[in-house]
Length: 375
Ligand SMILES: *[C@@H]1O[C@H](CO)[C@@H](O)[C@H](O)[C@H]1NC(C)=O
Ligand SMILES: *[C@@H]1O[C@H](CO)[C@@H](O)[C@H](O)[C@H]1NC(C)=O
Ligand SMILES: *[C@@H]1O[C@H](CO)[C@@H](O)[C@H](O)[C@H]1NC(C)=O
Ligand SMILES: [Zn+2]
Image (cartoon, rainbow, N blue to C red; front, side, top):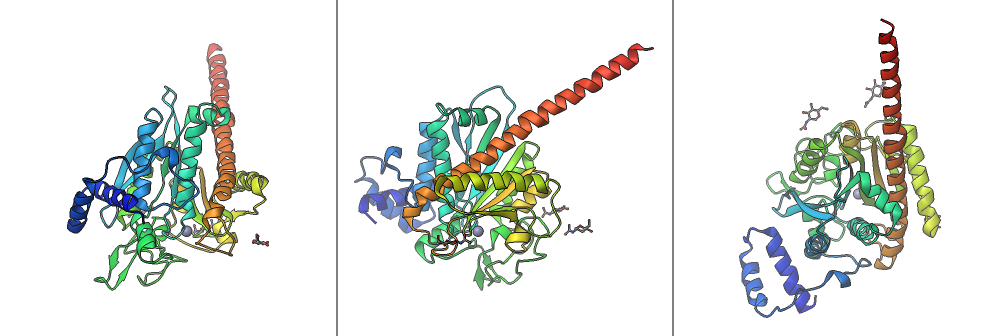
């Protein structure tokens, strides 16, 4: 690590941990602060073709919300197990329209580095294009995007410092005998009934109880409080090249299964058109494996109409360690898929749905008026 970068990474950690309980860190940082003159890096030179340490992502989040204050705001979501703050970015075009929400989280599994890279790419693309690109502008007239770039921050940091292939969070269990809950087995959807383990040594440890972890509590709390307005829940993983629909915990089909598959298949076609990458689309339990306690199934169960898990590149060659030279193509193609889903969600909601509702209400009202006028 370069000294200047090191300084600012430490600074970032200090600022964002906000607690100052790392004593040696504080001293080290203090020493270095005096020699630091300029900000460590400007947004203009931030590379979206590289994987970034958490301190850099924190820095990026605050810089991006400073650069686009009219459209992006950074919001506190909660604290991680190791007391780091979780923030999401809200992208919202000011207007009087009643908006619906699109949720996207990345990095619930620590080692899936391409996922946080995509969340950052997505935010960048929206912000660079919302003024001139009519497709994105149209989406933003009725939709707000809530993006959580790294859900499992403690785990993500651990993959940079200690174990590149760590998957879970970093909570301590059985008096420190083992660490980490699989946060995507900890949501309240048929919790720990299938495809999850009650042994804290296992990769798919479901935690001490449903929503026992601070990270899943934070996400569930926000989504639950806004569930009437959330139209679409997207959670980004790797690897496998899949677009997965509910459910994982049962082979039963969700209420709008056919619609979810159709929208998902269209997205996979749009994705393939970009760089030729093949994706498969289907319910988790059908095309991947059975699993309980996933955020996607939970989102569907609380009534969010569109819920998808993306498993990004690759299909087995590099697995979780996707080379940086594939970040750009992966993000470009994934962007096509996500925009395709958003176009469909938008069209279904703002055309067929609300227009349809208005029409049938109007018809019913006029019938009622006509009927009553007979008396
Ligand atoms: C889980 O969901 C059920 C309803 O399906 C509810 O009764 C229960 O209180 C929830 N548990 C938690 C911990 O949120
Ligand atoms: C699946 O559907 C059947 C029949 O409707 C129902 O009895 C069963 O409880 C469902 N299983 C789950 C896990 O929801
Ligand atoms: C996985 O990728 C390899 C190399 O690009 C390709 O030959 C193979 O067909 C792919 N498999 C699937 C299931 O897409
Ligand atoms: Zn994953």
